[in-house]
Amino acid sequence: MPSSFLHSILLVSTLCFSGALAGAESDFDWRKLNASKTLNWTPCYSAPLECALLQVPMDYSAPQNEVTASIAIVRYPSTSPKSQYRGPLLFNPGGPGGSGVDAIVGAGAQFAMVFGEQFDIVGVSYSTPTISFFKTEAERRFLIPSPTTVFFPSLNASSSSLADTYANMQLLGQLAIANDANGYLQHMSTDNIARDMLSITEAFGFEKLQYWGVSYGSVLGATFATLFPLFPLGTLVPPGLTLVFLPYLANFTSHMLDTDKSMDTFYSGCAQAGPQACAFHAPTASQVAANLAALTASITAQPIAVLTPQSHGILNYVFLRNAVLNALYDPYNLFAALAEGLAALASGNATLLYAQNEVPTFECDCTVPAPAFHENSFEAYMAIACGDALPVNDTLAQLQQFYEDGLKVSAFADVLSSTRVVSAGYKIHREGRFTGPVGAKNTSFPLLLVGNTFDPVTPHADAVKTSLLFPGSAVLTQDSVGHTTLVATSDCTFSYYRAYFVNGTLPAPGTVCSVNAELFPSSDSNAANGTAKRTTENLDEIRIREATSRIGSVVRKILRRAL
Ligand SMILES: *[C@@H]1O[C@H](CO)[C@@H](O)[C@H](O)[C@H]1NC(C)=O
Ligand SMILES: *[C@@H]1O[C@H](CO)[C@@H](O)[C@H](O)[C@H]1NC(C)=O
Ligand SMILES: *[C@@H]1O[C@H](CO)[C@@H](O)[C@H](O)[C@H]1NC(C)=O
Ligand SMILES: *[C@@H]1O[C@H](CO)[C@@H](O)[C@H](O)[C@H]1NC(C)=O
Ligand SMILES: *[C@@H]1O[C@H](CO)[C@@H](O)[C@H](O)[C@H]1NC(C)=O
Ligand SMILES: *[C@@H]1O[C@H](CO)[C@@H](O)[C@H](O)[C@H]1NC(C)=O
Ligand SMILES: *[C@@H]1O[C@H](CO)[C@@H](O)[C@H](O)[C@H]1NC(C)=O
Ligand SMILES: *[C@@H]1O[C@H](CO)[C@@H](O)[C@H](O)[C@H]1NC(C)=O
Image 1 (tube, rainbow, N blue to C red):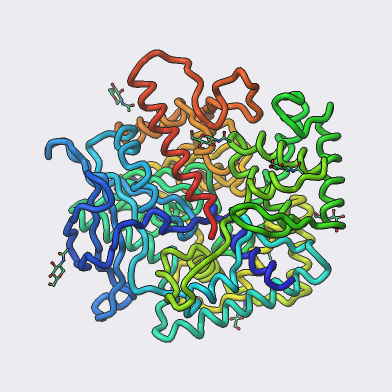
Image 2: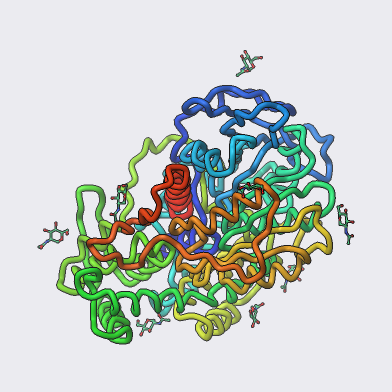
C-alpha cells in the first residue's frame, strides 16, 4: 500500500510537532501587500486586525544578498496609550509549519483580553518565495494523501511498511531537491526562524522578545534563548512541550515517554466512567484495553469500506491507530467520542469512527500550482525538522533497530518512530546551521517552561530537563492529559501566564495547576467539550475563562489540522 504510506507522513508531522497547516483562514489575499523592511500595516481579515509583509534576508549569513524572504505578519493591535504600550507578543502554535496567522485571526481578541491591551498580539506565517516539493497541488495530494484529520504512518501496518515508508521518504526528499533549483530550502531552519523573530521584534522598535510558543514553538523559543540569551530575550513560555533535545538529534524515542500513560488514562477513565459516559465501557481498565486490542486485530484481519456524504475510504489498522492517537492529542474533547466510535465499530458499524476522523474528498483544478510553502504543513515539517537535524544515513536494518528500541518505550512506536524514517529521506542540511545543544547560563529574563503530566508526544520530563539548561527558569506543571496545556481550560495555568507576561512573575517551584474538564464527562456535567465549569460568578473571571477556552479551541484545531 504505497500510497497509504505516504499518508503517514502527515501523521508524523502532526504527531511529533503537533504539526499544523496554515492557510485555512486565508480569506485575505496577501499578494496585495508589498513586502518592506519596515512594518506597513494594512487592515485585513476583520477589524481591528492589521497585516504587513516584512522583508528579511533569505540567507542570514549574507544579509546583503538581493534575495529576500518575506514573512506574513498579522497583529491584533494594542489599544493602550503609548506610555503603557509594551510592544509585540509573538505566538507560535507549533508545527513546524503551524500558522500563527490563523491563531491570531481565530482568537486575537481573546489573546488580547487574556494578556492585556498593552501588547500587539502577533502571529506569523511564511509568505514568499513560495516553496513546494511539488509542481501542482494535485501532485501533492497524490503523493501525500490524507484520509484522516491526523495521520501518522505505522511501521506495523504490514511486513513491508518500514521499507515502503523509507522508499517513499526517499522519493519526497529527492522531489524536494528537484523542485528547489534556487537552493532556498536550506534556509528553512529553526535557527533562521529564531532570527526572523528577532527581525520582527526589531521592526516593532523593540529589543527583547516576548514570546509564547506551543509544542515545536518551544523548541523555537529555546533555540532563540540559546542564540540570543542576553540582548533580546523578554519572556518566553513553552507550554506543554519540550522536544528541545530531539529534533536536532533526529532521535524521536524519548518523546514517547508518556504516550502509554496517556493511553492508560483512556482505559482507566472509561472503566471508571461507566457505560453512560463511556460507550466502550468494561468493568476494568485491562478489559477495556483487551477489547481495543481485539477490535484492532479484527480490523487488521478485515478492513471495512465506508462511504459517507463527505468522503469514502477504508477503515483499516492504520486508520484506527490514527483515530486513537488523534484522541490522545485532545482527550477532553475526543475520548467520549472515540469510545462511541469504537463501540459502534465493535458492533459492526464503522461509519461513526470513520466520520469522526475523515477529511473531505480532495477536489481541485488539477492545473493550479502547488500552494505556498506556508500552507504545506508536511513540507514545512520535513524541511525544518529534518533539515535541522543531523543527517540520518541509517540503513533499513538500523531503522528497524531504532523502531524496535522504540517499542521498549511505547506501544505507539510503530507510528511515533517513523519520524526518523522521514528524516532519512531528507538530504538538505545547511552547513553551519544551529544543531544544538540548547541552553544559556544567563538569559535576560528567566524562561517559564510549562509541561502537562501526560502528554502523548512531549513528555513532562523534557520541561524539567530544559529548565536545567536555563538556570533561573521555572517549570509550571498542568495536571492534564493530551498534547500541550491548551487541551482544556485552566484558570490556574492562565493566571500564571498572565502574571508572567504582565508582571514578570514566575510560579513557585513545584506549582501544579488542574484543569476545568473531565475526560469522560457525565451527562449532567457542564464540563463537557473542553468548556469550563461555572465555578465563579465573577464576570471578569468568566470573560477570561471564555477567552482562554476560545484560544484553546482555535490552537487545538491548528495543532490537529491535516490536509
Ligand atoms: C504596493 O505597491 C504598488 C506599486 O508601488 C502600489 O500601487 C500599491 O498601492 C502598494 N500596495 C500597498 C498595499 O501599499
Ligand atoms: C503489530 O501488528 C500485529 C498484528 O498485525 C499485532 O499483533 C502487534 O501487537 C502490533 N504491534 C504493535 C506495536 O502495535
Ligand atoms: C535515542 O535516544 C535513546 C534514549 O533516549 C537512546 O537509547 C538511543 O540510543 C538513541 N538513538 C539514536 C539513534 O540516537
Ligand atoms: C451506522 O452508524 C451511522 C452513524 O452513526 C448511522 O447513520 C447508520 O445508520 C448506522 N448504520 C447501520 C446499518 O446501523
Ligand atoms: C551521514 O553521511 C554524511 C555524508 O554522507 C556524513 O558526513 C555524516 O557523518 C553521516 N552521518 C551519520 C550520523 O553517520
Ligand atoms: C545576567 O544578565 C543580566 C542582564 O543582562 C545581568 O543584569 C546580570 O548581571 C547577569 N547575571 C549574571 C550572573 O551574569
Ligand atoms: C500584577 O501585579 C499587580 C500588583 O501586584 C497585581 O495587582 C495584578 O493582579 C498582577 N497582574 C497579574 C496578571 O498577575
Ligand atoms: C463542542 O462544541 C462545539 C462548539 O460549541 C460544537 O460545534 C461541537 O460539536 C462540540 N463537540 C462535541 C463533541 O460535543
